[in-house]
Length: 89
Image (cartoon, rainbow, N blue to C red; front, side, top):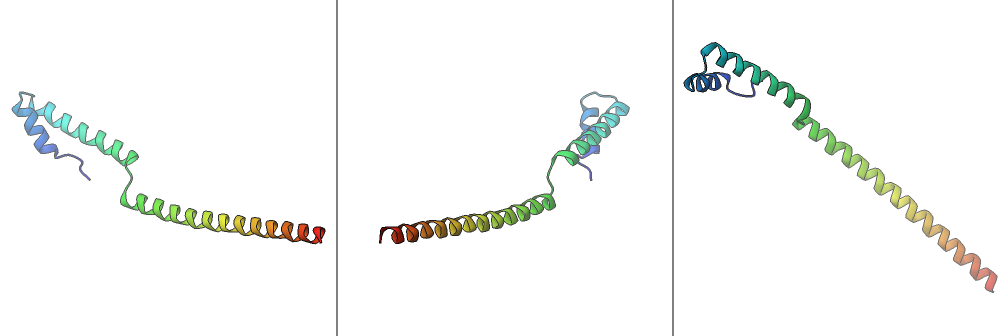
């Protein structure tokens, strides 16, 4: 995948007075450097989709965990209330 139009870039350099051989090398080098940087640091659409899927899975797990905690807490409180009521009667 070409990040920049190397031909247009080289032509622009040549028009600015850069020798043709230097312009071509600069265009090629810049293109390679940008490709390396972007391939290592930019998320692809697939990366984003995978992250969204993992986030949804995590959200589901957290909701189940919180629901479990709330149910356990409710059962504990009801048990304590029942025990207190039995003690008071």
